[in-house]
Image (cartoon, rainbow, N blue to C red; front, top):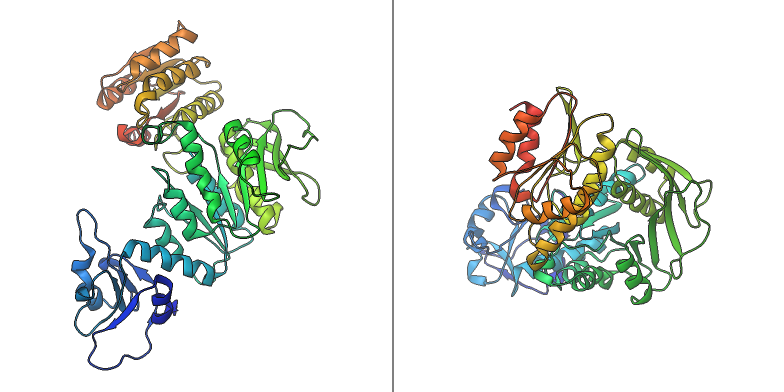
Amino acid sequence: MRKMMSLEEAAAAVNGKIVNKSISAYEPVYISGVSKDTRTIEEGNIYVAIDGERFKGHDFTQNAIDSGASCVLVNDADKIPAGAIGIVVQDTVKALGDLARAYRFKLGAKVICVTGSVGKTSTREMIACALSSSFRVFSTKRNENNEIGLPMTILSAPEDTQVLVLELGMRLRGEISYLTAIARPDIAIITNVGYSHIERLGSQEQILFAKSEITEGLTEGGILAVNADDKLLFDHVRNIIPIGNGLAGIKVVRQEVCPSETVLNCPVMATAYNVDFEDGCSFSINITGAAGEDKKVKLSLNGIHNVRNALFALLCAHFTGADLDKACDALSSYEQMNGRGKVTETNEIRIINDAYNASPESMKAAFFNLDVMGRGRRKIAVLGGMLELGSYASKLHEQVGKDCGEYLFDKIFVTGENKDDFTRGLLSVRPEADYTLCKDTADVKNKIKSYAKEGDCILFKASNAFGFESLARDMAAGV
């Protein structure tokens, strides 16, 4: 059985008290892993009892012991079953984080943490892809990026992990601060600062401050890497955050030659230049101080945003000492996840499923992608609304309409509470635009099904609640 840590080590990590309810003195107890669900417990796991809205984890401690748990972590000694051993703490969620932080250092792996308004999941995936060519990498699965998911990800990492790539999510101020204190990144990445969460935080400035909390957990000598094309973000970190030489940036330029000038207060820059979007996208990358010639990168993906994601991945490869040639080759085979711009070809129709979520920034990127992917085809944009924008919703939907109007799309279907704001922006830029307003998602499905024909390129883009991922999958399946 794997010996992740001893009972005593776990108790010390969480500042808890060991309570032994067995008949006699216990033999040394070792923890093989961590579980918060009695249905997934493996022999020797410590069961962490977490009380949620629907399920009270403390009600299942006996089930945990019966299923093979070596001990339980609880907030009440009375919840430790007779004959069992437990650790008692005040707050089991906090203790889970404390346990994860202890294991993070015991593991000894390099830790890379990613946050940002948009693109953090794709960036995290591309970093893991690039570094897996040189190291044993473990990464966040799905969206396990909160106060429970992040610690569980760390605690699930195999003992031979060399690089741990983690995603940090947030809704309010202080949440990134809490997560970065657990993960203690060696490299922290902020992809951008947009309008996601603005309904809760009230302004882009507050979002900027919230994302910047990631620096609080940086290890000594740690590096912060940011998007230098995001002026709001870049100006903030280079002028306000006192991290000296531990600042790196990524930048995309479209000219043929990489600019030689350096960026003030940014010791390391990864710059993409000679960017081309024929058959995916390709570019050359220059990294300040990297040995050898600039590398050429070829992705099967489209969009400036994917170039930036790849730059972060290759910057991480540079800082971790990975083989850059192998990292570039690995990225060439990276495939986009469904719902995040994944392209499907079926019945001569090209479908872009980018409906996992939507923000002003990701909408604009999706329009660029449709324009490139739809060359020589009818370009159709199927759009829903962007949620959680609060009082900014009307203004931002109008701006997205203007962004859409910059492209000569053949047809636009739009639904959602702010569809009139979108069309107002659209028509202000392109009065002749061909668009159709739809009542709801079902209406969208009926209309697009009767309109689409062989040879089309169709983009599905909306916030997740609109269910456009299903629309895209149904169209791909011919349903």
